Length: 138
Image 1 (cartoon, rainbow, N blue to C red):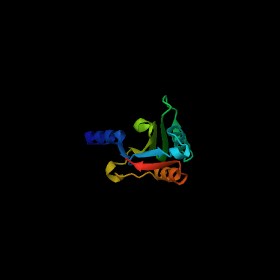
Image 2: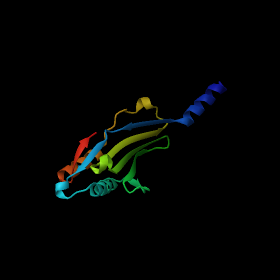
Image 3: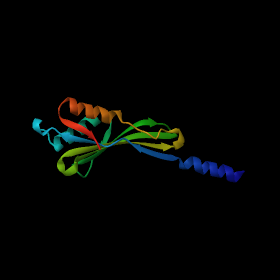
Image 4: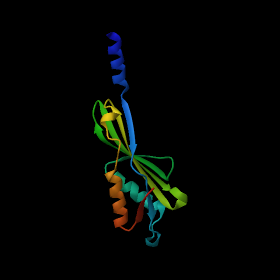
């Protein structure tokens, strides 16, 4: 009986980590309107920051990773991570990728294995409505 309780206790402490990503998107700047990948990158980072994401300073000026916690329980944490990469594809586009990380004691069987970032969709709609860039799927 002690062995079973010990195994249960160890299993409870290890927890579960589940990761799922949204489809990567590319922002192609509208060069006829004077936009470049540098400007689109800056606008994308500003847009994401305004959605309550915390962006980590990067050693590279062309890469940023931003995090927002959507669930912070004692037993389980969920965070959405958005990565923005400038000058992707030989300087013709900005790559944006969103993923969801679940860590804690909720088993993966109870967590959806699909993810669609509304913030990424809002960013795509914003840049297209403002004629800044065209958002394309990977």
